[in-house]
Image 1: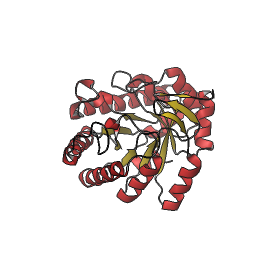
Image 2: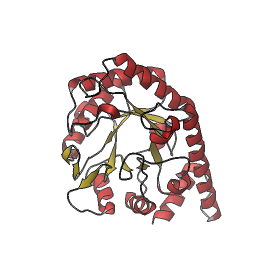
Image 3: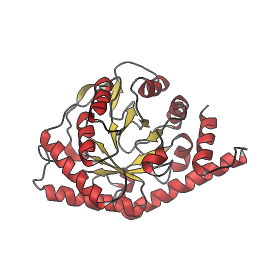
Length: 296
């Protein structure tokens, strides 16, 4: 997958819009307008703060179903994404929690969204929703039937879950790319707001062999210097919220601070590559070269 074609940068910052509870969820507040207003505020904050893309999640619908969400959730998310597409020019993706990638593809197809996130594409995970099995076989065929080139970013060893078998991380990354045909792989920490370890990042980076690798949780302006050498992009939510609190709306000032820290870390990583004798060129090329050397 060519990240620059999708995100207009080779090192994207993808901000998350956590939707307020949707119809049929236990905490649904009864007003879809309130959901849309909050989503529009957060999307605007991400765009004005310099994020490169947005991913929309039904984050506050917990407890989640492990497979298909209710039709009302699909309808509501479709309306929200359509409103955001008319509001901001950034690429938009979807994560229909817990693992309803079918609905994600359907919504993306109808709204013109460009990518989805899938928590479990391959393998079998024990989660608080029960046992979730990857559906790569069906999902990739459904994408072909829809006739859309919607990119699939897939978690490996997804947070809030444990694999039922015991594959090593390197094998899991390779299988997700080679057998699940993911367009990009996401590595997270053990829970929301927690980053992956540098050891795991190094293993995943090596296994990805230059294919797109993203951090899926725990990135902040305080730790991006340590994370940047291993990944191509980042999906970020918690550290962008007011006071860093997950229930609060996104703060455009915190978005700007994070984006500045990310870009500074990318620049520093490029300079390190230059000092190590990598060939000169643009930032994306030099960062990719340095990353491959670091991970090999």
